[in-house]
Image (tube, helix red, strand yellow):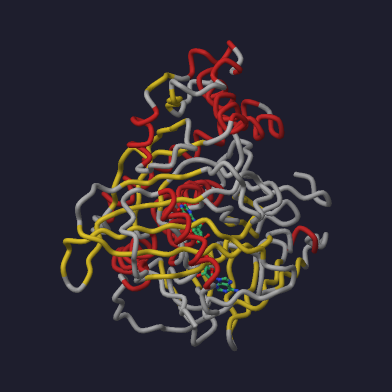
Amino acid sequence: MIPNHSPWIKQLKRTRPVVPLDKDVSSDVVIVGGGIAGVTTAFFALRNTDKTVILVEATKIAHGATGHNAGQIASYFERPLSDLVEEFGAQLAIDGQRSVESAWILLDQIVSEAKLQTPLYRFTGYAGLSRFDQVLLHLKNSRYSVENRLIPESIILADHWDRIVDIPKEFKDLYSLAPQKDLLQLLETNNPDYIACLSYQKGCMNSALFSEELIGYLIATYTDRFSFYEGSPVTTIRLKDSKASLEVLAYVIEAERVVLCTNGFENFSILNEKGAEIDTKFHHSVSGRIGYMSGYVEPLNNPPVAISYFPETDRSSSDPTGESYFYLTRRPHEHDGKDSYNLVCTGGPEKVLPNGAEYSGNDSYSEDARNVIDEFLRSNYNKHPGETEYSFCWHGLMGYTPNGIRRIGPEPCNPVLLYNLGCNGVGILPSIFGGMRISRFLNNEHVEQSIFDPQDQSCKI
Ligand SMILES: Cc1cc2nc3c(=O)[nH]c(=O)nc-3n(C[C@H](O)[C@H](O)[C@H](O)COP(=O)(O)OP(=O)(O)OC[C@H]3O[C@@H](n4cnc5c(N)ncnc54)[C@H](O)[C@@H]3O)c2cc1C
């Protein structure tokens, strides 16, 4: 049996005891869930409003997806931009992309104001493409980006590739050509299937360590307006006309607004006493997918990087929102008390969580997933040592919304409830952007329409 062992949780070295809720309490705002979404929502709610805030977490801070991800900071959606344009129209789709990009600045702002020490690496990240349709899709996205003054990905094609002649002329200004060996060098692979290399700004950090450090800052800074409880699962949320009450252990929290930052909707019920029932379908519309990752430690001989690989043949695994791919990050890592190591993390294999099935972080890791990753690394990553022992194998739950977009904003059937949830595979920057956007709703500002707005058939806004 391989245990679920995440390098991010290991780095926490936390000593703070778990303090569960032990009495009835009240506040202006209650945030449910202490992953990066809940903690950054608390940060912006406290910083940008004068509200009192309580954060309740079922287990421990950052032990959900935030403690079990790839830790790659990326600003793409797991859907092509062209798809978003078709669904939402150009303006909203482009604004959505800009919003996620804007979270880079919000991240800097948090780090600098809270004086966080969590290492944050920034670099140019790469992605390798191996098929004509993949290249066309990215060229189409680039066209939208250029036309709407977004920075496009840089696209380099192998100059000997025989399909270059088939690329429509309208895309000619969007790519450059180079010898394939140069592309492969950027992609750190010897696999000649890759005929295109994309590059774009990326980064990496331990989002669990970031969240844990940030909560420490909030506790120390907002002594009179902030409290938080771990080991405190919310079982029922009762929504009334202009307030809510939450059942937690044997106690009740009363608040004017509730912000759900739970990744999905599982494990609690929402009773809307104000009127229209919150559609059960909508309520259960976040579906779970388990992502598997492996990591090994090597000497610190190479700089930090993030590379995605889109292989020629899709693995049989299921990615209804788009293409399946492998993603690799490498970053400095303290090991055996020394900081002269890198940690190389790879993910890709996923399993859909059947409807109604419960995910448990205590479940063992899948040996199949480790073999798939190992096989992938051997045939694609030229710095793979051949024989390697994985120091870490871990899995985490991703909550997918039906359209693959994070849900941020008030519930149309009762705005006492707000959401910042639905990780959709890439969730670090969207969570941070979501936290800032929620603070604007809490301040009763006029907030412009967006692709992140919760939609419900039964209660139109
Ligand atoms: C394998 C994997 C790889 C990923 N890779 C990346 C990546 O490279 N880059 C990226 O940007 N994103 C990535 N993600 C997604 C990213 O990790 C998430 O989007 C992000 O961490 C979401 O944070 P969150 O706070 O919304 O959710 P979580 O971190 O899951 O936090 C939700 C919290 O809510 C709590 N909770 C749930 N129910 C209740 C309740 N009833 N009462 C109280 N508390 C409750 C949970 O205990 C949990 O702590 C990955 C995710 C996985 C699983």
